[in-house]
Image (cartoon, rainbow, N blue to C red):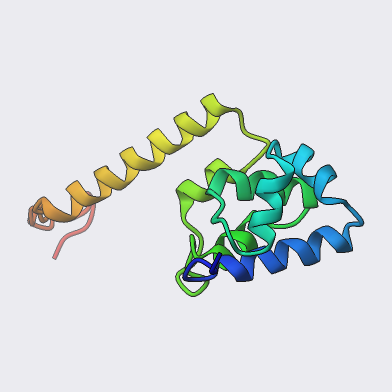
Length: 137
């Protein structure tokens, strides 16, 4: 079976290298990530393209940066920076409810910013200068 296009093989070989460095078997890492042994093996050989969620779980099991895996998998462009949605979903310390609320707030702020950019910003009215009490010209 040929490799899928893009960086799938790259992420697979990187995962295998990290797994071996961590002295984990395919079976151990698969169990940690909640995937089957054959599926992890196919990812490592570049035959399958893992989802962002699977990459997150693999990164957690390997104790490496999920962002690095996302870049290698082509989910993130390393030059453009980190996507907020991916960062929030990748954070294992946040509950699903916290992730949802945080992303809702983030989206609201973005929409507010877009609205402010398209709306005309009123200029402050010019008020005549008055003399301070006790001062005369």
